[in-house]
Image 1 (cartoon, helix red, strand yellow):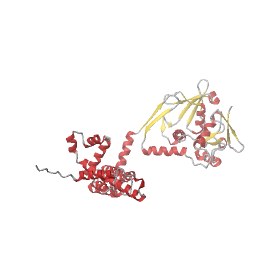
Image 2 (cartoon, one colour):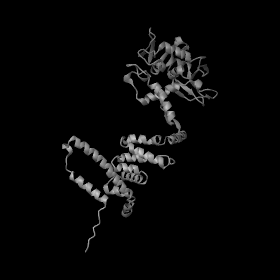
Image 3 (spheres, one colour):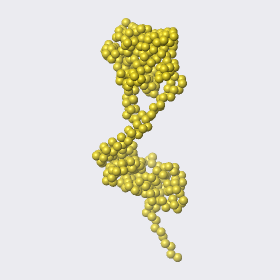
Length: 422
């Protein structure tokens, strides 16, 4: 009887050789290796891993028959079961294997020589897959070759960023056109998805949720930064005039900055609303306004929107915002609907900035450009809108000036000193 020996396939023989080589060093401790030997071993083993991974992927790409014979969904599912691996990881390997087999021969060649790691191969194949479909095979081939060359010098994360801009290198004339198309599509999609919702919570706060275009969000963030990041000298108060030990979390700074942004909008530049430039009217009784122990009602389209803010807040807003105080007498008749000129003019504010330089609160050095104009003699008590009655205060101290818990004194130097009332 003649026995016919079936020759071992070279790839199977390679796998057996690798196992035998690993078995020969399974119990060898590297602790006594020379430093130079460790360097060599680490570099060579990393390259060997890439080469071995490419070989395994090459076999997986042609192993549909394994899945058919074993009744598995695909070779990834079968292999995940055989080696107790995560099915998702094996499926990702199978996808990479098919990409390398179909159209990323240069990447496969880079792995085969140990120049491209598995992680780099995933990045490159994805970058190639995301190229516009109409760039043509020549540009695709150039892009792949260039990224494989980059793999010798850049990590996967860096390679990912390079992959996004690879057309700038291999086909700059196409890159500009494609970038314009992508940007136009993104802007169109952003406009269609944009939304802004305001939900009254019922405890004096409103939740704002929105989805904005990037350029709109960038502009808003820039404006908020303007109110939260004043240039300061060492030891100066932080945002809103707070001392360093009272610094607030960024999310709260942004909330306060948003309120300040709305207060500083120039009504003259806003669209007309109901026949007049956008404004807010508040109603408050004259005795309550003077005492401060009151709430003020915001007037909306239905006239009466209910008690929405304190009289202190109404007085503070009357200093800088387009708030029209509608003062009511005992029978709710309108006694006063603002004065002929309640807000300080731009020229007056410039003069005050030149005069005051910083917030006038004692010890506060927030620059004048970050302050608000305040009436020393309150508007509710007949204060006049002139330079002698005007003073610059940062937002923090402007709020404090309108809090009944504090008394303000004007010092001989012109500084404003705050005292907590007992």
